[in-house]
Length: 86
Image (cartoon, rainbow, N blue to C red; front, side, top):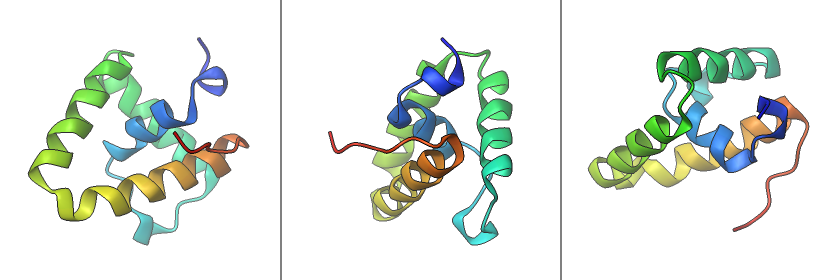
């Protein structure tokens, strides 16, 4: 599956695990590069990123929701797709 065909939520989870921050005001290109970099670091396995997101949500629930909202928005803009509510 190509990244452009991957669900927004999955790409957002990958971005969530990156070092990129909302305060960096990243461009679409930077967001896509961060997603690519993290996927490579995880051996191309999005499940590895999902596990990390779950760990972070449990360890830092006070920042999880805001970061995930940002990641969803950033991925939607970077890949030109609309995030849908689950």
